[in-house]
Length: 320
Image (cartoon, rainbow, N blue to C red; front, side):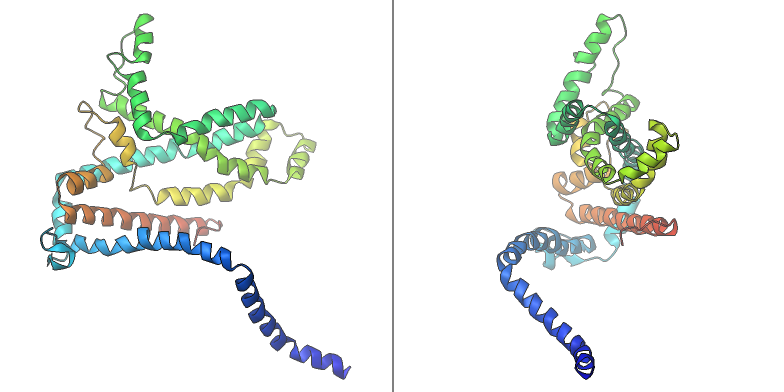
């Protein structure tokens, strides 16, 4: 009995020693993997954290001849000038409008598509459809924009040619503001919905089959199973992705707007990313462009924190 009690008394020290040795052991054993980990860490430090030093331009009257640190410090003067610009309010309005509509359609469609694909019984048919739906994600917005104008152009677009052949009037899909907005959202849904289904299909595949069997015993049909089993089971995944998407509400896609814009549609094409490009790259006003980008990022952070807090209030895990 004394021997047993002594071994129990020494076990915490023994455990700590074992943990210390095991860490060193795994470090030596997986040294190559740890060295490989330095590559993505270096990438993040160089391309994500190092450029943050340039945010100081938002508080300076930047002159190329004086350099970043030699330019005059003006505090919040750049922000006061920024908020007084007419284009600023217009860009914020358009960015919120386009991204909120995108959140309604482009966020919900992958969920619906994943639920529908999960109900398809033919494996071959499902794989073919998944491949066709994933394909647009791998196309650049320049290619998608060119395809859109070939199909939807009012003068010689394929769709309008078909409409004219059937005796209808040509529709200015991309040459009128409201029609452009509808086309913008439809093209965005088409480009993103297939790729977005991957996460939801993975979440659905992890649902316990016994839940479906129990629902069948209770007399539930296929749609009732979707509503009462599939959707509640992937709710955590939906909430997590929703929080992440809310953080991008103030960002938008510069490439998407730039590829689809034209001189006839100017009501909705002035957004924050486009304004940053115009002021910074085209206009050379790097201080104002940096201030606008910093404002956009701060609003995105606040939206993520707010959405995470609301999710936790509703009983979800959240991100943080």
